[in-house]
Length: 176
Image (cartoon, rainbow, N blue to C red; front, top):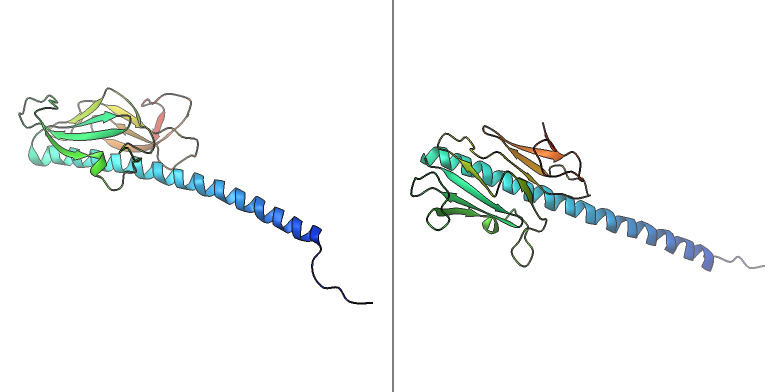
């Protein structure tokens, strides 16, 4: 009798199926990992630009503003010193699409939509205090490290959304 070496077709098919299942699971895991990083980068870039605007207000002794939309933001300095955002008059000092850390779609918008409370803009006076408390959120189901920013009169804090089904409120953004 001959020694038969090799694998049977059944054994080979079982191995192929197991490898396919593992590959499929890793693709979904990788996609969630990528989305988590995109959200973290986007929220950190917004946070960094808020801090920049606050510092510019104190350094230049002029009010600064961030105008928010669900897919973009623009930073202004109060050039006419009336302490009101005049989009046609006040100088643009930063834009979201100029920040290389913010991920945009091909249309130039955020890759993950932003929600916010407290109106459509945030202002900082010459002492660095915010006159417009606000919460900025990015809702998702991938559980990123940071997905909200809470702006109070004296602080800008990164946070984590407590409940994805609740709104973008100060109470729903847990900071450390």
